[in-house]
Length: 335
Image (cartoon, rainbow, N blue to C red; front, top):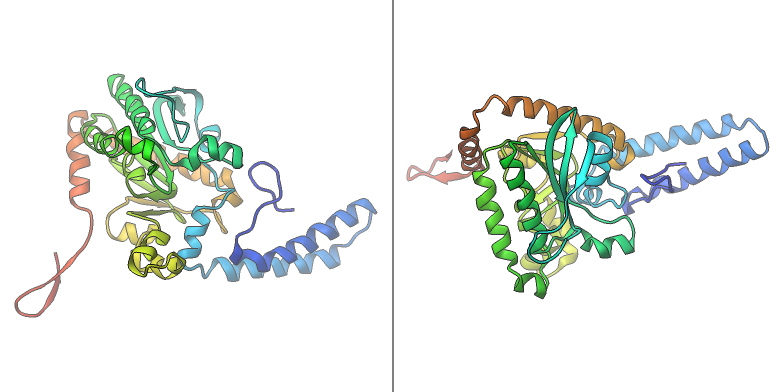
């Protein structure tokens, strides 16, 4: 039986449906053989082979929008899952000391291989109750202010900062706007650009608009293979361009928001390969991959003098993007 993070039957996405019947037959035969002390390997093995072939067919030819669906998979590991697997001695710190504690953002102090670090990032819920409590990972301004408070604390004690990005965007509700959502995001951009400690950003799932960028100003930006990073969701883009949000699958490939596109454009620095079929299929494996990358990138950033880190961050963002211009001669060149 394929199990998710909490030991429950793994949930499948729409394009994975061809695998469901095969997996159910394997589970049923395995249970029947166990209950009746029978050897049904001659029946089960061909089904396992057929399932593997089907997985290869599906996951070797993913469209852009299918990868975005993987980034949103309900069993995908979130920040707290990585904290359990990678860090030790995590102490969560709450509140922005202005309004309240926004649970869409988790922040605190921990140790990475014995080294103290500061952590901040989005956290979605696993069920309806937790999603309501965490607002589906969409932060209010007090969430961003909490993250900034922890980052400023880290700078005071010279601790590296690691942020986890996984949100469809900042919460656009009336209350959030009244409490200064745009100001909170802008303040984070300004203050993060000035931090004199190493900052590593990890885009683990959805990297949506200002909600992502508010904790995304780093010296290094790492991105999971099936994550995306965009100014808006494909659904929002389709609604704007075609007045039809159902055309998201057409918008996704032309938006250039997947890891390979963003690496080529210099938006991100490193792609973290996921287990075949997505990070949710082997959270321990992707956690080990992430830990190795964090340790390696921190060691490299340690070589940069602290007073040079803001300029390093600045230069990194100045180099982003690729564009072409048409010269008067009619030739097209890169600039």
